[in-house]
Structure formats: structure tokens, C-alpha cells
Image (cartoon, rainbow, N blue to C red):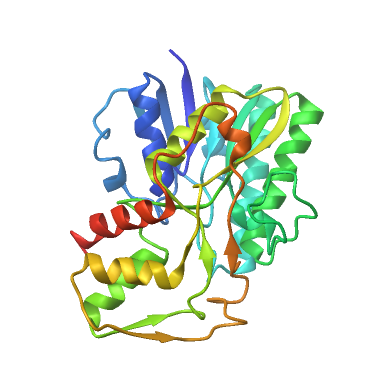
Amino acid sequence: MSRVLVTGGAGFIGSYLVEALINLGYEVVVLDNFSSGSLDNLSRVLNCELLKIVKGDIRDIEAVSKSLKECKVVFHFAANPEVRLGVPKEHYEHNLKGTFTILEEMRKKDVRDIVFASSSTVYGDAEVLPTPEDYAPLKPISVYGASKLGCEALISSYAYTYGFRGVALRYANVVGPRSRRGVIYDFIKKLRVNPRELEILGDGTQTKSYIWIDDAIEATLVAWKNMKKGFDAFNVGSVDAISVKEIADIVVEVLGLQNVKYRFTGGVEGRGWPGDVKYMHLDISKIQRLGWTPRYTSREAVRMTAEKLASFL
């Protein structure tokens, strides 16, 4: 039976990945500092003998070394997840420095496979939509996106210098019941406070892809199972995209509200905040050629998430 390490395994995406791996029969070590993750996210498998939890930081050499013991592969999902408000130093420390620490300990312990949770933000304001993996030049417009691209570069360098196999998943907006940030969550929270008016950051025309969490996890496992020597990247998204205003309409409908006034902030050039990519739609044909395709559209994923979150928010 193989043992794997999931960094950030108590987080939103990481916790679903942990469940999937345990269901496949793997021993799973979770390394998480619980700054944004929660044991509640792991409640379904918390008492499973296949799960081991290490509370620690990915920048801590000792914690990483301990977690890597007898592991065959690393699923690196720990990061500073806040795209909008993250301080540059935080992105450097948690994303770049943390990834370097993991790669160095992997090198020392002869662990050679790493699956990395990257982001669509590495593309910046792409001029080609849907955007393929070989789009260039990659020009992130946020420090978060830059840090993710930097992590990809580090992994690629270790792959070709030290014989690693690395794969990066460039996720669109992943949504689901455990998500505690993002536009759907924010809209529901705001409407619970004031059901008559909804503040919408930007001009509402921002249009992006959203992917249901189960689809994202299935894509992750497919990419892992098809890893080859060297480094590769895969877009993971849906076949369509949806505007922020359309998301607002869905959330209002799910909450059973009527006559809600939308108040747009205008933002920066219509964006929600500086560094916000206004239009994002990924070309997913590369990973589809491996046999995976999303079961749900962006609209379906948004609606299902709104329904789940509305039940307890």
C-alpha cells in the first residue's frame, strides 16, 4: 500500500483530494498549519486508520521531512489562497519558499513525484480565449499568480535537474460546499445581511470559468496517473464561462429573493480589484485527451454551490 503526502490537506480542495485518495486505498499524510484549513473539512475520514495528520508549516524543514517519511508522491496544495488581499511577502513565504522547502526535502529523501495545485492566474490577461497551456508569454497581473508561476518554474527545474516527475494543475475557479471564499460565498453573506441590495465588485461583466469540486478532483487524479518524465501542465476548468452578474442572478434566485438592487463598485477598469483577471476561460482539450471531461458547466457548478452554501450560511 502506497503512502502519499497532501500538503494543505485540511483546506477546501485538499480535503476532497484526501477523501478520494483514502477511498482508493492509499495511506495519506496531511501536512497543514490550519491557518485556513479545518479539521471539519476532514470529518468524513478523521477516524480512518489510513489518515495521519501532521500540524506544521511547509516552510518548516523538520515538519516537511517528518511528513515525507515513506511517501511516494507529494500532492502540493498548501498555499496562501487569498488572491485579492494577500500581502506580497505572504505569497513569497507560503508559496515560493514553501515549495522550495518541499522540493529540497523531496530531493534529499528521493521522493520524485509531485502534483502541484497551480492556478489560471498564471496566464494574466490572456489574449486568446479559451487559453491553451502553451499560450505565451505568461504575464501574471497579481502577486498570487506570479507566485504560482514561480512555483511551476521551480518544479520544472527540479524535474529536469534531479529526475523528478512534476505536473501542475492550472485550476479555474473551483467551487463546492466547503468553499469559504470567492464570489458565491461573498454574495450569500452580503445578502443575508441586506436582502434588498447587493454590492458587486467591478462592473459585473467579469467572466470566468467555474468548476465543481468533484470534477476538479477527478481531473487531478487523471493527470497524476498519466504523469511522465519531466514537467507538464494541464488546464482544469469547465467548457463554458459565466459573468459575475449572472452569478448574482443565480444566488438571488437560490435564496428566493426578489427586486434586489445591484450596486456595482466599478472597480479598476471594471475589475473587482487590482490584479483581478477580468476574463478567464481555459482550453481543457489537453486533459480531455486523457479521458477526463467535466460533468458540470460553470452555471451548474455555481448553482449547486449556492444551494449548498445557502443551507447553512
